[in-house]
Image 1 (cartoon, rainbow, N blue to C red):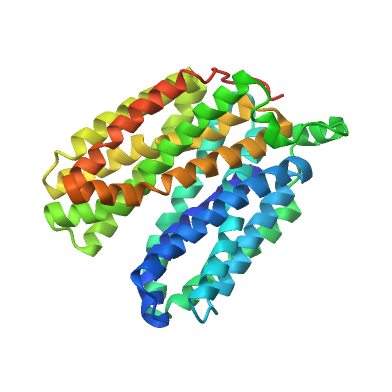
Image 2 (tube, rainbow, N blue to C red):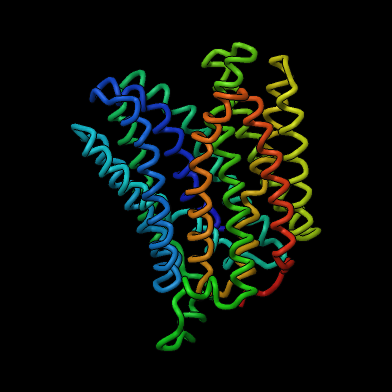
Length: 392
């Protein structure tokens, strides 16, 4: 249970940071005189750091241990997030946000590997889904905390608050032990063994599986970033939602995502990974197409929750899926590298949504997601079913 909580807290930091930087951008721009382009680039710089950090911390976790590496990643994130509070110009902001992103990139995959290895095989998807739920609690806390802190103390104090996970990192390091599976794997590792990165493409079959997983991760994050970035604007244009009402919509949608993850985890452990992904991907297609037809505030609110269930409910399943497809010697690397490369692709969603919206409207941009989820369903065909398998 401790490993599950630690992993969920680590991924929750990721969600909190996404929300925090979004709330703080206007205040930072006014304080330091940033242009719109400079302000927008802060999120991009953080994402680039997260991709690089994902690769580095993933490999480190497979060599040095999950608990140790997860602790370091959270500390790195917390320290440079705290230093953001003393930034005096754009250049300093870029450096601190990039380095904070490196720490941020390590938390998803290492935490998923830790939870998957420490939990019984029959409930592995439920465990990794709860890690995903932690990632949704982070933004919900951000909604509650960021606004009041900004209003009373300003953006610098908000980044100090964001650094507090460092205290949790020290506490976790003292109470957690490495999973037995990792300890056994490290003891059996031979000199000259292939690097974890090479194990992701060890043969043609493995390379095809890795490519299919990358497609899943890319579509997953593309849908998430696109919806969470642009739907508040869509709601403001379509039914004139105020900022406060958009905040309510965001909270309800995130709650739907968390519920979807819990349901997905139980379903995946009962009927298998492949069928569960297909059910949720089909649900995502239907819910996206229906959502863009809704016109009343009440229906849009309920529809947002349903959309959240299917669009992001699958997220927690990736931890179990990848844990069962890759050996212990490359498990954290697979989780971090494939997810963060997918996050790099998904990070293009706000820009692509904007380009489509300019010509065809935001409704068309959101509806376009249905095509991507259809591609997702095809990718699942190339991923073997290993529900409840013992980890190698």
